Image: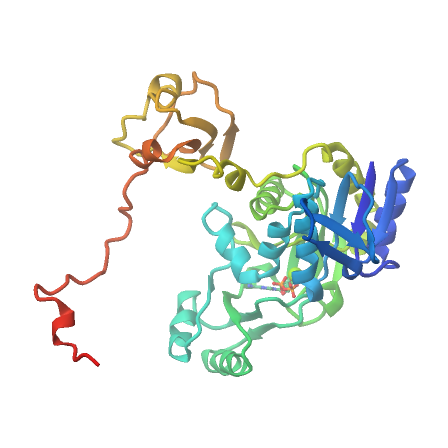
Length: 400
Ligand SMILES: Nc1ncnc2c1ncn2[C@@H]1O[C@H](COP(=O)(O)OP(=O)(O)O)[C@@H](O)[C@H]1O
Ligand SMILES: [Mg+2]
């Protein structure tokens, strides 16, 4: 395999370890400075230049895009994707995970435990938001902080309000989050590669500090993760669109609470704590997958006019409950079931004999007009729109 590692820090531990691991395995590997790329959209096909010359052909790219160059870095990764070069972490995945609010929003509908979180803009909404997550003490977080910078523990409602107002005043957006006290300054970092956790460590904050980041003086030790924690870590990474990720979890009273999913996890701390060859595991996974570049299925399938992708919920009362896929009539309507979601399980390419149950969600490809009739009307929340008055409103409005 010929692998490109995108990185700004050629000499950093992680970059060097990945490069060495690739060389040891007989791969060709180049570390390329992310900011020296040129995105070429002038020709018939998307192309990339590096240091002023057309880039040679690569089988795979491993992005290590730092927070300071997210926009340009993800643009370069997206360009590799357009050129069908395999990447374990897509541009979308990197962008989604970088913004703590966006990440939380995306994870929130997938049964992943997270600390209660709120986000508001107007100062009048701040007290309510703090109450929403359980009241003071609360954690206030900058949307794009790293290394623990921008994560503050506010002991009282008054202090929390003052901090949030100050940050809003300088145009910084913040998350308001329940302080998970029972975690006692500890958290776990699971290093996900593909479908498994290849290494995990526990980080412990120093003294009376509550942030366990190594950059804040936290210490690390290896830990054998509960299967529950492993499963959540892998699912969180996959939902974000990442196949190489560091998933940070607090140990809540009711199990794992995902705090963040890092798309460029550092390798030094975790390799030192676990004595495991994490870099090697990452390279092996990429070599194994490089034949299958990620395809934006929705985008590609939507190109066929009149066809598209939709999720059909099988709900009680629906005629689909208890039917096999074969007998359900979906195929006759030219609807293919791509995956079946049951609780937290996913069945890819479900067989025709599979019996549908109440609560299943079917990811389908087919004719829009046929699928539309199967998508249940939204019934969860009553509409709060007021009825229009009988006389048209515009009549009273002075013109001119
Ligand atoms: N809601 C919370 N409750 C308790 N501790 C938290 C909470 N959020 C963050 N922390 C602590 O602060 C550290 C940094 O928070 P995190 O959201 O990971 O930001 P960063 O991106 O800066 O690492 C975490 O590793 C954890 O130790
Ligand atoms: Mg963190």
